Image (cartoon, rainbow, N blue to C red):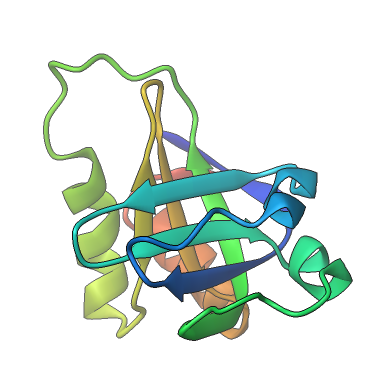
Length: 129
């Protein structure tokens, strides 16, 4: 399986569940928005956050994330994709933030772990570019 690093550095923000999605997030090239009864989570380019006039009510914010994309599209019948990535990273004590879309999966990890994560995944049999 092939993983590709998506250029850039990303931020993850948490808002109250009823908060409006800030307009500035749409300036982000990579954007994921999830709303539940408990929270509104936004993943976006760190540059979009830095360019914003504040984060407008964000309750929490995590910066300095990198992103690895599973080359897809992936068929919905496939199983264990995220597990096969997360397990060797967990063994290496590297935490992840996973995002799934219709076509594929993305694995976010802190930038200071990127080099070790890539090597760990290569050792586990992944083609990481």
